[in-house]
Length: 391
Ligand SMILES: Cc1ncc(COP(=O)(O)O)c(C=O)c1O
Image 1: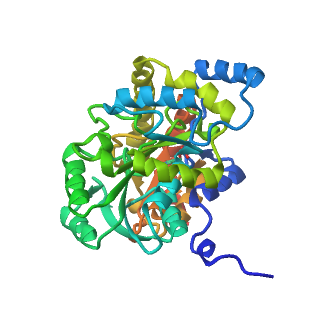
Image 2: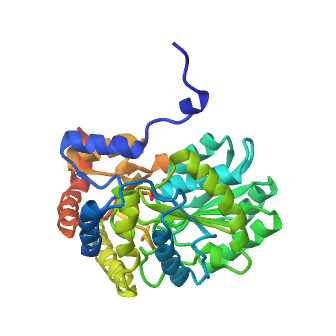
């Protein structure tokens, strides 16, 4: 039998999806894979019902239906503070996942170097491998997840073609400050590097943190390929609607990659999701209030359980330090946690390039009742860990 390609052998199964399977096997509350367990806004549900009857049901324009792009350009122009042209600056993709892949294929040739902060969202390494590019990792050091400016300078000195910026960040919950972004911008300009952003959590922030769009920094629009999606903002991760925003010469290339990768995002779902893009600003403030409540409920339990963690500034994840429990291996700890305590997390080592084995990640995009149930179980963690250690 012919062998499969080498590139597919260089990355394994997603650890997050494996932990979901572990959670299902032992009946644990699954706080590993990050997706909401509550409904999208009513306006979207009603629109989806209407579209099911009225269509469209055939291919949309490959780079996005015109009315979806117009609504998206209006909404993103408002939040990004940039005058976006729906016919020149946008490509609609199958989630940010495809947006990132298309951005990487557009920016990089095989052999090009790409800066990836570590810890990272696991897709970035796969995107790099599939593109044939080589990652240069720059550490975001826990617990603050700040980068060392000299390390970043040294990474840029290796002439990377692009830097991937996940902001707000999964898994760390970090929101990059203006100073940090301006420092990256200065280096990107100096070394003529693309900045590929993943901003799927652009609307999930905790006061006083604010999201700054890299593309909106002075002079940065020309070198920024902004990727994001509707998945998290409207709780529709299954609709697979994302987008790339970039200057026209980049968009021309992204359109080609996207066309041959997927042809296009689902036409009926683009039509229905316009109802989300047209929601007023109050929707986004409410979203922040809802997530702030969820974060506070869950962190409240972590406090009561006496756990050490980094307070997330954005996104819906929290990294918890498990060093005190005495396990050498965070994967073994996570499996024990799912089995014995009944809550599934992701072992932190799957996000780090460095040998970090003392962190696990929970997500809290769950109904408050689910978070309370998980929290109640975590209150027994310390005592169960002590028993396990003494056994
Ligand atoms: C940082 C980040 N980017 C992208 C995605 C996937 O986004 P999409 O559903 O738009 O493909 C996720 C999902 O968890 C994520 O955390």
